Length: 151
Image (cartoon, rainbow, N blue to C red; front, side, top):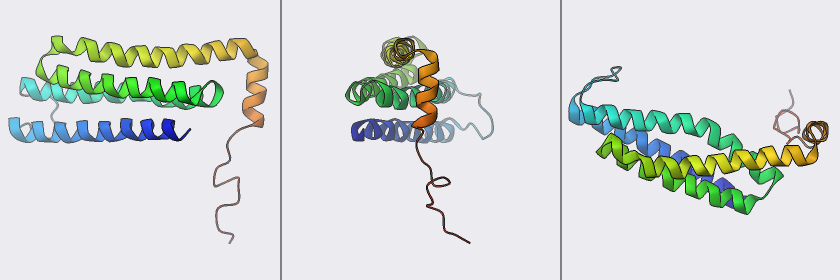
């Protein structure tokens, strides 16, 4: 799953860069925080960043679960498509609202394939088996694996 982790990292760095673009647009078009309206280009930049945040909420768990239950290589490839789509979406949206469709479509297709794959996996395994498998193979965290120092 190292490639999946790399793609997740790229998606998060991309979102951070979109945030910096919003900060630059605020400064350039003199839109003082906490305002979210003002100059048209600022509004499109801000909206593109917020739409990306909305998509990340669906994308991140989808890619992790797809990689774990189905195939990590395919998850990474779909994740790369998502990241490329989001970059095209952001660039297009900032330029003109009508120019965002290609990038949005690439990201949406990647996310939908990830979600559809999960649905197929659950259907193939059976709901009760999947729930049982998830409870038996849950990942250990620092609270359950003894990684925290003892008092």
